[in-house]
Amino acid sequence: MKRLLPLLLALPLMAQAQSAIERQQEELHLLRQGWFQQTPPDAGHAASRPGGMRDSGQDGVGLLLHDVDMYFEGGIGFHSPELKGWLVPLKTGEPVDFDRPQDMRIEVSEGEVILNPQQLANLFNQRILAYPQSMLRNFSMSLDGDRLLVSGEVQPLGIGPWLPLRLSGGVKLEGDEILYQPDQVKVLGVPAYGAMSLVGLHLDSLVRLERPGALLRDNAMRLNYHQVFPLVGIDGHVDAAWLDDKGLHLRFARPAGSPAPRFEPPTQAGPSYVWLQSGDLKIFEILITYSQVLLKAEQPGQTLVFNLKDYRKVLSTGITQVNEDGTFFMRVPPYSNDTTSARLVSSAAVGSP
Image 1 (cartoon, helix red, strand yellow):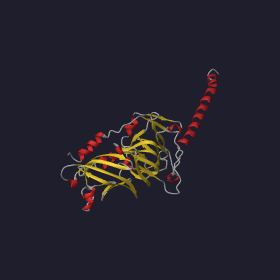
Image 2 (cartoon, rainbow, N blue to C red):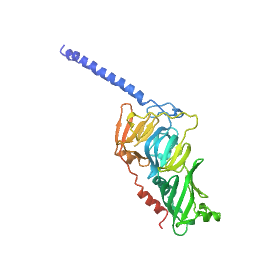
Image 3 (spheres, rainbow, N blue to C red):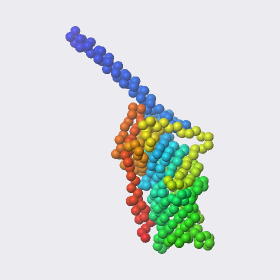
Image 4 (spheres, rainbow, N blue to C red):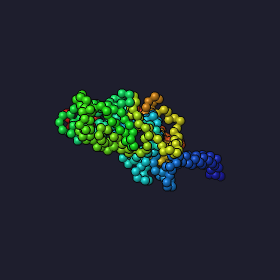
C-alpha cells in the first residue's frame, strides 16, 4: 500500500504532462502544415512533382524587390523601385543556391530597374571593357537631360597612345538591345563624327568591341540586357528604355493577358526589402524549403543594398530571426560596394598609358 500511494498521487501529474505533450504535438502538426504550404506567386511556377520535407517539388523561388540596390558583383548592378520575378535553377530539381549564382537565371515578370551614371560606368569598366585587348577604357558618365555623356580613353586600331574620348547621345530600345548611338564624338577635343561621316568611316572601323552582351556596330553601342550583366542571365521583356536625371531606366512588362504575380510579403517588411516566396533556397549551405525569406534594411530610411556575389558579407553581420510560421527575417546593415579597387583592376587589365 505504501508503494501504491505515491503512484496514485503521481497519476494526475502524469496525465497533465501527457496532455501538455499532446497539445504541443498538435500545435507542431499545425505549424508543419504552415511550413510546408506552397504559395507560388505565379501559377505558372506551381510544383511539378510531389513535395516533401527536403524538396518542395517546385523549381525556382519567387523574387520581389522593393526599393533595393541590387548588385551582381562589385559595383555592377542597378536600383529597383519594384521588380517581380523568379529565380530559376538551370538544373531541374535543384534548389536556388546563392553560393552558385552562375547556376540560376532571373526571370523577370514586371517592374523597373534604374542604372545611375556610376553603375553604368561600372558596367563598362568592370565588365564590358575589362579585357587585355580592349581599345576603350576608363569610362565616366554623366547625364544632360535625355542625353548620356561619356568621357574615357580610346586607342584607335589598338596601337599607339591612348587618346581622350568624348561621346554624347541618346538611347533607344531595339528588340532585346539598348542602343547608345552618340551623335557627337570627340577625340583629343576635336569633333570627329563629321569628318568620319564624310569619308564613310564609323566608330567600329577604328575600335573593335564584341563582348558578352555588348557590341559596337557602326556608331552604336548595343547592350543586350539578357546577357550583359555578370553571373546570371536575365529573362523577361523590356518594353521601354529612357534617360532622365536618375539614370537609364528599363521597364519590364509581363506578356499581354498574363495575370500579375501575387506576392505576400510580411507586414513588417518596411519600405526597402527583398522577399523570397515559395520554392527551395540554399543560403549559407542551409536548405530552406517552401521559402519565406525576408531581407530588409536594418534601419528605417535606409535603402537595402544586396550584392549577390558577396551575399555572405552582406548578411553575416545582420540579425536573423525565425518566426513560428517558418518565415526567416534578416535585418541587413548598411553595405558599401568598394568599386575603386575594381576600377584599378580594370585599368591594369587593359594596360597603362
